[in-house]
Length: 419
Image (cartoon, rainbow, N blue to C red; front, side):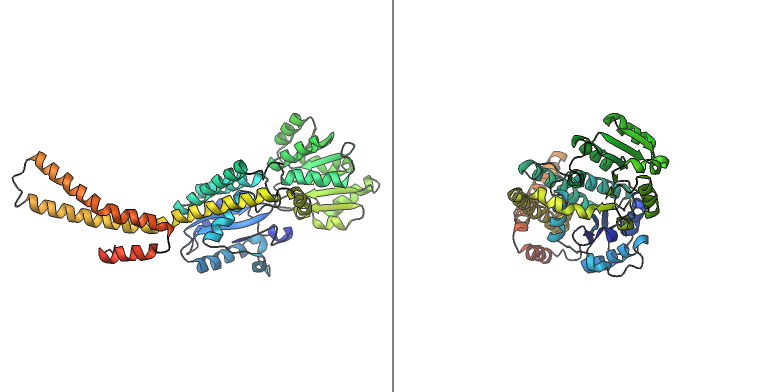
């Protein structure tokens, strides 16, 4: 269950985004819900989702919806459920595989989502909220992503949110070579943006980050100017373009600051691109004359153009996803067989041991140790041969429609109901 860039605007997505520093606590809260056996939270600039394993999907949907509404920043929001999508069973599996393969991204083929997915899965592992089902599901999704990248040309023109943002900047200005850019945030996204900017001809680039050492490290690599975070407002007047990609829970730039900066620039136009998971720039900035603000949702049109010409590759990628969904569901169905097969083996083994003990203590009491071992081996071989056909048939039946009937018949024939 969740919402993404197609179902909800950025102002709603950011309201229920999960703070990375509190993710472990949020995962444990999710896991404590009565219907949830396993759970993972995904929270990026384009999506907020809960992936869960639960025996009762309706109960799980109700509880997860309440969990999302309880997010502190979304408290009291009316209409959240109008933006939510719900997937169960094969649809849920297909959705996660498409997310991992970047087929559900704003920028189809971008590689960042896979790394984010792995990060959120590892966080859930550390919090102890994943078990056998989600462990298998997420690892399978990583393999699907690898297949799609290897077997299709979906990523032949490597694109990402960062590269699309720079494409947008190139459209705003005829040339970036004579423009000064300020980058707020030097994390993974900031690093990518900075490199794309330099490849696009930007020679005057300022980088700031809450941790100055990280800003300096990136600036040294790219030969640009590091700015201390507390000082960056003083340098804004120099920037024609300001790109925000800081993981900040609060707004960094407000209208009053930008108004003052414009006065210093003698009303020369400024452009802002906000790539933050939670918006770095107050949206009211866009109401100021000579100021133009773009957010992640505004990148979609640029991203759509990048997808043109790769429709055939996307179709092949969807076929791979469909194949992998069938394989995963086959494994999931096989879990239903395991308790029955185990119970059947245990019952026959108990009969074997009981009858051997009875015979060895009465009519066969005088056998030597070697003869006793030979008799036990023969009894075990008989049990294995008896079990071979029904177990093999049951495993093959996973691909058919009658698996439940086979399991039920086996339980009744061997009196396994209570087990």
